[in-house]
Length: 275
Length: 272
Image (cartoon, rainbow over all chains, first blue to last red; front, top):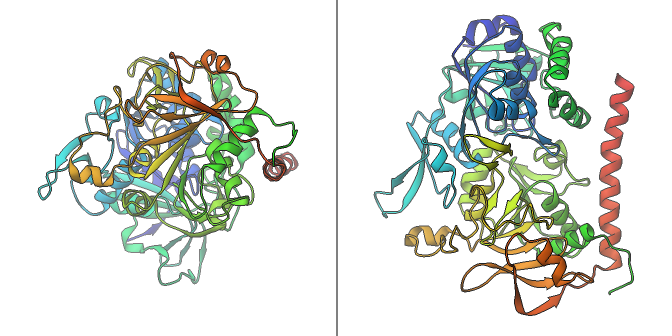
């Protein structure tokens, strides 16, 4: 049953130190405001899961919140590296980070398997790739019908998944539109879920095949306008591509990064936090 | 028509890559150079080519090139947008993709791609973004085109890490697989398009060999930019020069894209 909570209360209640947390949103609808609240509450030793760590996990990793990252593509899209992620992997700064690396197909299938209550996902994947040599979570399984060897990866079942969406109705049913990524799968795979939304409306206006999360499948809803910025919310505001480019210089240097985070995240309010 | 146009090596690469796509081809597009070439194809000789991006956008027709794989422009101009698991399972693994169009950080003589790291996995010298969609795009698409600038740092004898399969360490990784795998496994990289030349796998050994040189490019230039003793086909052709129309459409696309993104910068400056 979805409860309407402040973002501060939702994160405090559902994200504990050492938890396995998935914040999803494929370029679109990345729950930045929630990520910033996790940083402000100084959560530690998290296992972070995200197909594309993006700036949100660069920030969480750089602030020392994570001890493990499960991912499949760790760059700044169209720009270059995630420097805080690289610093953690290459120089173990600010804390050592264990990485578990997949492909997009494997992670998408693993979320789906988690939502389906299955222990693992099967795919025709990783053929000829070195990834299985460095990730012992990638195994093979023999098809009982044909004898074909297929890849198997454990399903993703986070303690809590956090996603952003356009809107909720007054009961807490949520509508997600545009690039829907793996958000539905992430929410249904998790024990708890937090959904931040741009606004609450009387009627969702969802078509019969829309991507809707019923309120009884969600733990908490927080109303956070601009909650996905600097990523974007289809129908509300565009992706701040300029900021994604600027991030390269901010994150490249440890001190510049720390200053930026202090000014824009640590000293900001939970609601409507900047960038 | 070949003209005395002043064409840059990078434009030569994009135009050559765009010509590799036929009309009505279904193409799974990587971001960056492949996206530029695929959209040029759609705006010139292949208006009905179907472009798919891994963010779930099917049959998209962006007016400007996206910065990221999930830009709103891709969704707004798509026939439909599906969830990411559906994209990889039904559309890619289900065998609906003709061409996977990829870029890379490193490529070796058997067309294996490395986008993971330079050095050793546990103690990397340089950590790169990783595989993303590429490992399965390269094996589940019917064939693969690779587009990458030619340099010794990029074209190495053997990649540090096989993120994405070309033909394996010895060129045989796609041979003698289980019959059920063979039914689904694509041909792999059938051409590599660079700013100097076009390379294709030798039908016997699968080693990449130079089959076409771009106009004005010498064999020595390719040898110099390749990190293994590169071989040339018995008969090396010259890539046809771009037409005036291709160059005009490409430059307009890039100018439009630049204006679009610069517009965002202006908005940002006003806001701050």
